[in-house]
Image 1 (cartoon, rainbow, N blue to C red):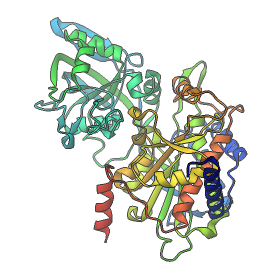
Image 2 (image 1 turned 180 degrees about the horizontal axis):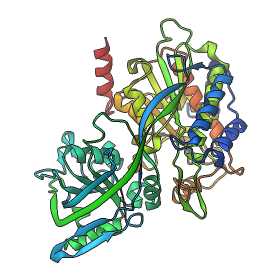
Image 3 (image 1 turned 90 degrees about the horizontal axis):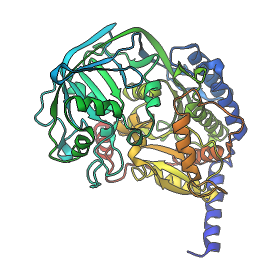
Image 4 (image 1 turned 90 degrees about the vertical axis):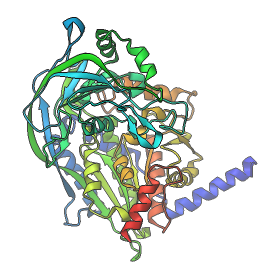
Length: 548
């Protein structure tokens, strides 16, 4: 089996079998390009929820689905799932005023050192003289015997915590090098609120976060969104915020402590939270509105009476950051790679399915979500208000950012090893003689940062495949250099614009592979399951058991 000739024959056979099963679909590179060119154009103004750009994006996606004879995905006969969102814009430039020992004071400047906001749905929120407490990584994980809040009462106080989860060498805790959900900023703010804190400050670090401070500043400037909540956000902290690592050093110096030393000490299992002997004050003023944003949903119904109520779901978020802080004279955050490209890719996957719909036993849903950039809001809303039962959703495949640099010899499975969708992905990549590789940067927590995660969190097996890094006819390391260059220079900036020089051959190949993955699941009765060791396996098993 190790001879080159036999291996080639096996791969060729796989290509023939998969090509026949999938109807010899060919994803169009040019069509993907056309979709991105329009969706990322200045005409759509960065596609912020509730903006004219949303209207244009929703209309465009709907028309594409209608033209390929998809069915409206909502059981009420429409193409949309309405998602009620609370939009808020900070109207002042709040400073974080810290008073320290001997009445020393320092005002941390909005934008340069500090970014803060509130998810309480009110026009003015104040934190006045609240005690500052350092809580390490801000994690309470009973299953790991870890509690950064151990012995501390943080009610009414402002907590300071580090980005990500504890980077332990022991892989049995927090995934070792890989980030878990405990490292996500969403978790940290939620846990801070559960602990009764008045405010929460995360210390940013470019290497640990996986993106520069400019991404923080840009992502939380301009209008932000949250789902409409019955309690109007009363259970959230009054203040949610970030500070730079240099600002954290200055803050700790005011407490006569060394930040770098305390950061290193925070990975100890016997870490104890401590008061900094400082107080913080700030005022956040905002204007708000309530909107009905939309998830766009198309459907192809399976032909097998016993399986047509099962679903494979593809997702890609259509939203981006809209119009915000200008950079080099440009204030439109076009979001070309993130995620006009993913939308274009899923539209073409839908077209491939529509051309081979007679082969489908299970049904396939194509969902283009809102509010991903504000915290996976559209996908979360769907999982909490599903149009079709999650117990009957056998697999979820998410597309967020395509390969714009050419063909690769690999494809990356973010969160590799969590479900047998990885095995289906490996089979689907065989026709191009490509291999599956795990995430090269698991410490960035990619599996917890896009729209597949709300599905996984509810127990639905979810696949998030990313571009490969081993580019054909390029030197080793070239792909990682391009990725890091994009994150540093274009991610969540106006510079994320469509360029005619993009090489989308690899994107088309990736979409072909992901089409084969979904087709394999939808054209058969194959069971998709979480693997042993996945944190979602127990949730899925309980969900299915309770539904019987």
